[in-house]
Length: 263
Ligand code: SAM
Picture 1 (cartoon, rainbow, N blue to C red):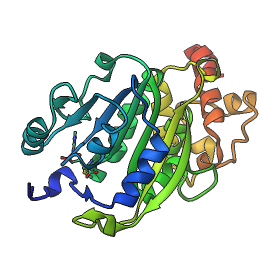
Picture 2 (picture 1 turned 180 degrees about the vertical axis):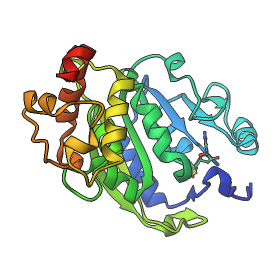
Picture 3 (picture 1 turned 45 degrees about the vertical axis):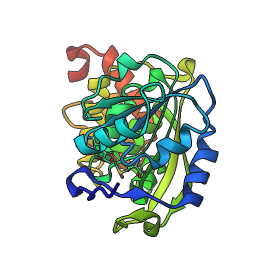
């Protein structure tokens, strides 16, 4: 088959057997596991995965590629959802999911936010992404790459950068370097329960003013007194707070009544 890659679906097909071997080594798929592949494309990674597991589930948006996969693989090997991974109902897939994929780079950041929400159903995730996105995912506080994505993911997952992949491993080659990343959900008992919408609001507001002081960046959400109660210096910059410190801010706000906040 010679599919003409579609730019709007971020299509860059992996053809390098050495890279495919390294990805499989990193994932170590085993029979009986519930593997979900996002964006199987022409099936390069799918075929390698199927050498280790009898069956997997995939989500592919491109109608032509979905038809091709249905033609080349049997229903016993592949359950294919012709769907948008950004709007997919992951809850319907059950527990202990191992989610993998060479993700479409044009939607990778919103997709990671969607997948962060299903962390409790996930055993682990392995993705190929633009290297710069992997750097942001794994970044430590007080570095250039640290931001909303780092906090949203690290709050729930241990993020491990695995290895880089050069543009020449794809057809057509992307303009950027790529990298493989592994995400492992933190154990349930280590997860701090906070309201997701509130947490998102805090980090969105904080990182849209990352060069300001916390006092100004979080104005309207938490008072200076609140920051003092949390022993967070009001003169610190938002990009110096760890994910745990942002969780403390969210927990604190949840326990405050509106009157407490005015004082
Ligand atoms: N896995 C293949 C490989 O490694 O050669 C293809 C990778 S290509 C970078 C990304 C794949 O994701 C394409 O097959 C594309 O059609 C699919 N895709 C793009 N946007 C998608 C979306 N929103 N939901 C599901 N699949 C999507």
